[in-house]
Image (tube, rainbow, N blue to C red; front, top):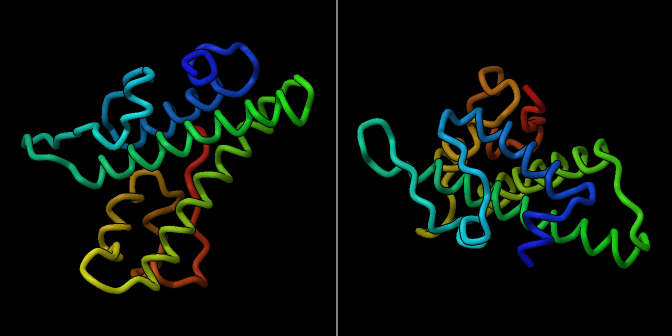
Length: 159
């Protein structure tokens, strides 16, 4: 498992972790190269603000980005080995699939936020705090973008 997630030289895992590193730089938090424990225990990672308090929005964003990246690495590996008979992916295809995966998760969070009710539901303000650092053109978004399905929102690409 460690080989697939962190060491395999086939196009995929290294590209995904590099893109994630670039995307994570937008949060202004330090990047730590992924390890087996860090990727599988992403939800246990603690991030603190400059004041020393826990940053739950950053922790949630890390959990989302890391687990989605990990799952994509696994999916691409299975697809390459089983479906494509070992044929490598192109870097651009991996890049496009990474952003499609993260944008899909953003869309899922927006839809569930708009529909969910109750004390455990993700509130629009929380979803906004979680996704704000990595959104493209955040300042141009209307105030109610989280629950307004008519607003196109996406993740920043590259630096």
